[in-house]
Length: 199
Length: 331
Image (cartoon, rainbow over all chains, first blue to last red; front, side):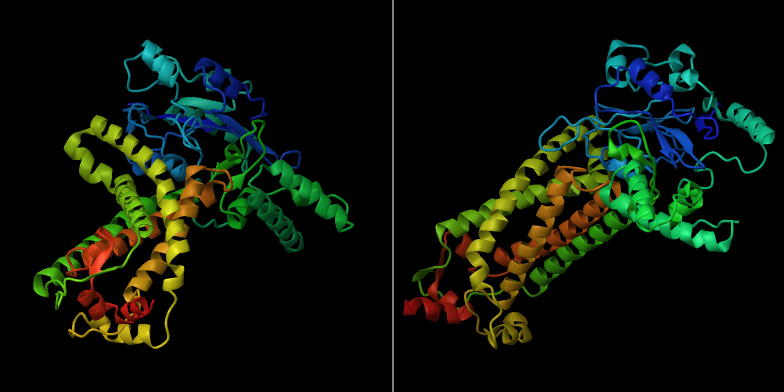
């Protein structure tokens, strides 16, 4: 069974935001919600790296662990999806996520959050595949049509890769071999590290 | 890269990141501050020295932030590994710690009630004296009822999915949790108002009193040796409860408001700390109030009338708050 993953090649990303725009457009993402974004470290200085970041669909998802209503579920491909019907908008998943993937519309009383929204790997949600309700709630379900996420498809430099982990690894390995040692994707040393030993 | 350059770079990075983190803004502002700092020091701008290495970012700061084209500062955080620590706290330490605390409190009080029994009222004279005015009683009950619902809805965030959801299923539970969230958000306001009123009305009676309070505490309130140590309008135990409610109530209110308007002041690290404080003090508060409810209802005969009707038996008052009765009779 394929394990679907994202990989953003920080050496290729040119901060064009095509992935951001593609995602926004494909899923009719409302104003104020940004499922995908491009973060640039060292902007304008040597060692500038841009990384396109959305949900990383973790194997042991912290968002699912802290949810007080257990609205998350994991598909066979390893995707982390959630149900907007069960979500109460408490915001715990945002505190737990190391990448800040969950997004909330500010629509309710006081500063309260509406239902959580995040990158779905273009796989929709628990509603019936390709139905009207699913599109309105979660956006397009490209995976049900046999396609891969649009952000990776639209990437102008093929920095953002999405698909089966084995195939992505192959592609990335070839790039690394061609470039030589030292060209690592940003965050490759750690996403969750407590101590960093620089060798 | 010599060792010399390394520490200059680390220092510049550290200053930059501390400023950037405090503002909670994207790297744009931090970069601007960096250049200004370098120019102010009279040095030429050295981009290589100012750029940051990945390993340094996580060592100097608890999260990695950068620049981004979208205007939401929360999105500028690329990685925040503290989320893992918060997850461990929220899923392991908090449920276990608070669960044990609450259960221990209930079992302890249950044991005291069954073994020792309630504190008996010695004589009943039949004459009543006013103990709490209508306003005081209104304030107390408004705060108390709000607190009960706040406590239940608050505990639902932590224990609900473990114990309640398997009973009623995810859909009903989600609806219940949603309404619990509304209740928690809206009843917070009368609770805060009540705490404010209590502070205004009762602070003057709750200052520690020389000689009296310490003697009361040393006697253990007279509970276990069946004596009646002197006390004013409030005995030392009640004063401790008052100060707890006042101070913890303020802490809960402040953290609660910050959680109610998320990211108005803090970034994600600040919000995590706010949630930790709110939940820890919340559970301690629940334990304290369980004790308070016990003493005020089951634990002591004649005590409930004070808040229930406002009037207490004079004999009861003389036995437990003799200094206050004398003061009242002098008026």
